[in-house]
Length: 74
Image 1 (cartoon, one colour):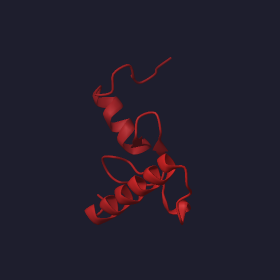
Image 2 (image 1 turned 135 degrees about the vertical axis):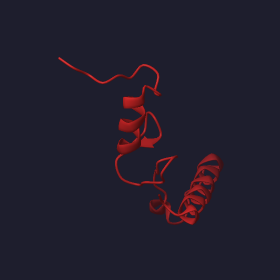
Image 3 (image 1 turned 90 degrees about the vertical axis):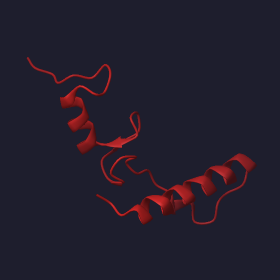
């Protein structure tokens, strides 16, 4: 699990970025903002459609907790 401080820091950056975008200006150091998994905080392997990382996606899909997703077999 990721430390809570990283998640808090990233959410604050994302809020500042969205506020700047709404006001029609560029945020200073906009490259610092990146997506993180909402459950584990993992920055890599992020799936935009679901807002989670690939590892968590696989676990939830196997348990059947993501509607419309099931493991393929042929």
